[in-house]
Image 1 (tube, rainbow, N blue to C red):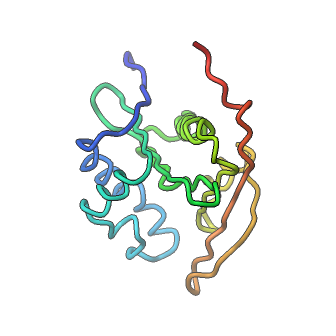
Image 2: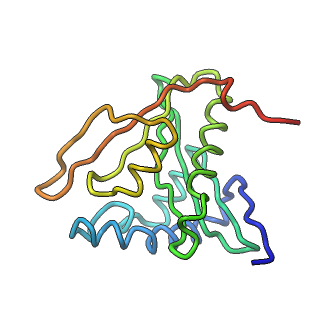
Image 3: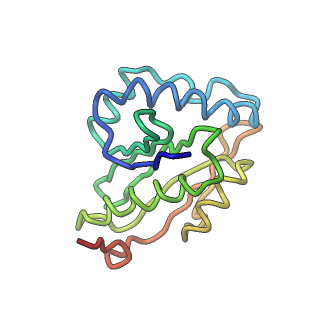
Length: 167
């Protein structure tokens, strides 16, 4: 390829790129569940900007192009809720999702209030479930949203020692 992928904190100027990528990435989820009204496909730019402002977001870039992203925020109970881990379809299956997941976990693990990580995905989203389980997440709950969609919530404990960074 000639270029390496870099991961960095998302900035306000990334919002439009993230939203476009999100729309592209969630098409397969919408097709899988037969529902194109899912929140990632209906989220507005203003809603995304507000989400970015109150939480933490990372982007992966190949050159100047945003090719992946993840975001999250910590609640009052110390749960870092990780959301919308997206990787451009042409960049999937190269370990980028796992890199982003580890990077956002490392960010939240650096906050002393973080006790656990939590995320969710649809019950039919096998690739997502495999990724999360391979990173130590276990299922803690399910919630039926409709006749064709059950959300699976997964968690793992935050252990600060697992995320030590080298100087």
